[in-house]
View 1 (cartoon, rainbow, N blue to C red):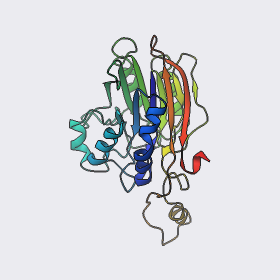
View 2: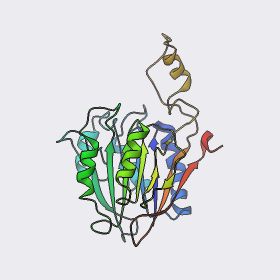
View 3: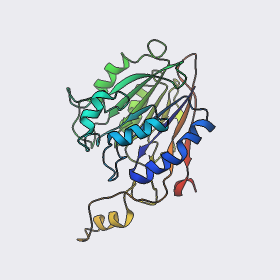
Length: 268
C-alpha cells in the first residue's frame, strides 16, 4: 500500500506542476492513495476554490487537507459542506463548516484510509486545544478496526508542536506529516512504534522565492520599502515536495517512508 502526501500547493505555479506531473508520479510509484494540502492553491496563494479542488480530484488526488487559510475564499464555506474530500482543521471552533477528518477508500476500493487534519495552537489563529481534539480523534480513527491505514496532516508553525503530535500518534497512525512552513525538513523517518513522520513536507511551489511568495517584493517588505506590494506568489517553475509512505497491510503502520522532491530549483 503506497500513500502519496504532497505539501501546500502554492498558487498557479504549484497547480501547473501538479497538472503536468501528478499522474506520472502516481503511475510510476504505483500510488494507491493521495493527499495534498490545498489551502494556498488560489492564484493569490490564499485559500482554495471549488474549481481548483475539483481539478485536483480529477487529476488523481483523493483528499485535500488545509489550514489557516481555508476560509480565505468565501465559496469554500459552502463547498466544504457538500464535499467531504476537502477537509479543514478538526480543531477549528465548534460548529465550523465541514469536517476535520474522514474515512475514504483507496483507488482500487480495497482499503479504508482515515485522514485527519489538525492545526497547531502556537503562532496560529485561535483554535481549540489541538492535543485534546487529537485525543478524541485517536479514539475514532483506529487502525485495523475501522480503517486499514491513516494519515495525519498537522498544519503548524513550530517544530516542537509537530514533533509532539508525531510521538502522540506513533503506533496509532500510518503516518504524521507537518505542513504550513513550506520548507521540507530532513527528519524523514519511521518512529519507534511504526508511524512514518516528517516535521514539514514542504510546498508544491516555486522555491526561488520566500516560502512561495515573490522574493523581490518580500525583501521590500522586510526592508520596509514604501513601494512594497501585498504579498503575491512567485510564478517560476515549481518543485513538488512531499513523501511516499509504504504501509504494512497487516498492521496498518509504515514499513518505510521516502521524500519526494520533483522538478524546479529545489530538485537541483
